[in-house]
Image (cartoon, rainbow, N blue to C red; front, side):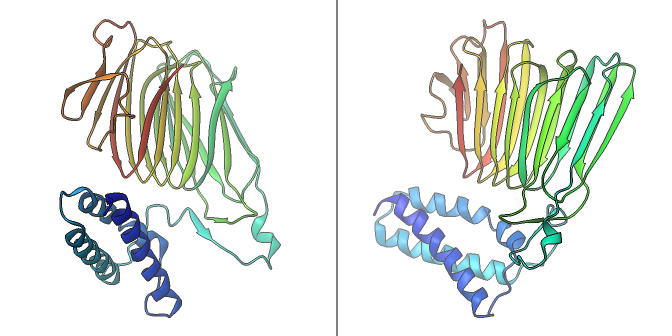
Length: 304
């Protein structure tokens, strides 16, 4: 029995049973509570690659499925970190629910030398592409969510906080699109926390010191430039797709607790368990250090 069949088969059975029990009123299915079962995916993955006969794997897989349902039925319905951010609605009768709220934020560059962008949001599409004469320019032209925007400045340092304030309703008629432009003079750092979102940040035109990203069921693409000699990237994600695009001549190291495949580390040399480096890492004038803690995620590094 192929281990891929065990993994996906048990996964589909588990979630199929949860949905079925919800339909018959046996369980009250809450998405944020289902999401808290993500460690079960790691267990299923482990079961699927164990060097056991197919029958033993099947028994273990069924036991994991039963355990998943048992755990779900006994979980306390604590608030999800993104529960206050969005709720899902499939009733089209009230068109006022889909009103688009437009917002624009900007702040003068002044004499800022270093800047940090803190972004906290739920689901949506988040894009950073292009430069501005301001320190930052943000535009939001769709969706019914509202963002707060604050800037704290002290002796050439600026901290920009962009966080979602209101609850939004997501469905086919309503999206949450946020577009960001930055000044290319400061040395930038980023602290990003998103939910089930698409994030596409082209940072090739900026000097970037550090990036920290937390995401759940997200698609995250980062493109880094060569304007800063050293950049640290820390990614914590679950069930996410992660792509990091780096300059051709940059030296790069990867450290991760996730299982990295040969494709993930193509062009890298293994230093020790979970630690890989490009052959030019020690001598390269630009170094990019990446730490990844990703559960059941796709991870890829590409060069340009």
